[in-house]
Every structure is written in structure tokens, then in C-alpha cells.
Length: 170
Picture: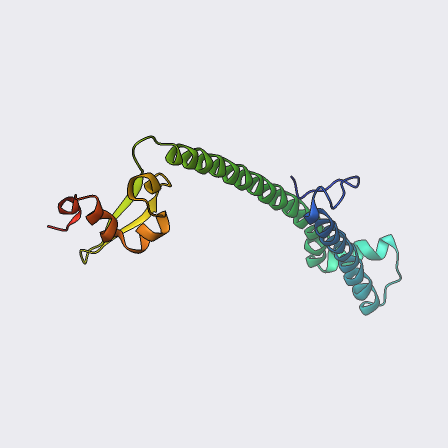
């Protein structure tokens, strides 16, 4: 999905496309009106008629107009580069999130189908307390308890296993 939308692209395929086009249109409008407005203002201020000769005269008497006139082109180019980079980052993030979801689903399938064992994450805190942030669903077969119950009271499950000496802080 890109944020640089084509005129045929609908907001159903890219909801951000409508917003991108509105910003692009507003930017183009300001990019055209502002330089023309400053030229007209300086022509009026200097008492010059609105003509090509007057525009050249204003540019020679005030070099700031060269910057004002070229700024919309450079800003438009910069907007294109930034929009493309953001679109690439968005696509990369979506691909990474999809890969992470697939990896998590694969891990959960493996953890819940582990025969005769369980996977868990054991956390020993600096104060000596114990926590089990993750316990696979196969703990139901071993402890006859839900993973959430064991996470709330890890010592009870560890005591049930008869191996509490392994889990105590030295």
C-alpha cells in the first residue's frame, strides 16, 4: 500500500489516499498562489504594470523572489521523497508485523502440542520473588490448572511438582 495514490485508486484500497491528495492539492494551490501574490504585491508596491518585463524587474530588484518562486518545486520534491519513504516504512512495518504474527502462531501451536511437557518463562526477580510470565497450555495436562492460575500463584504449581528446591532463590 502506498500513500502516493493514483487518481484511479479508491479510498477502499487505500484510506489514506484521499487525505494525501487533499494535502497535495492544498500544497500545490499555496505553491502557485503565494509566489504570484508576492510578485503582484511587489509590482503594485513599485508602481509597475503586470507584465513579463515587470516580473523580470521585480526579480532583479529583489532576489528573494527567486527563492519564493523555486521553493514550491523543491518542497514538492521533498514531499514526494518523504511520502515515498514513509510509504516504504509503513509497508515494511506491516510485513514485519505479519511475520511476527506468523511466528507467534507457529510458537503457540508448537507450545500447545508439546507431548508430555510444557514451555514456560521463569523470571527470578532481584528481590528473590518468582514469576512465570508465560506458560504453555500443556500445563493443564501436568498440573490440572489453567495457565492463568499458575501465573497468579507460581509457587503453588512449583510445590505441586515436588521440585520446589529447584525454584528457590539461593
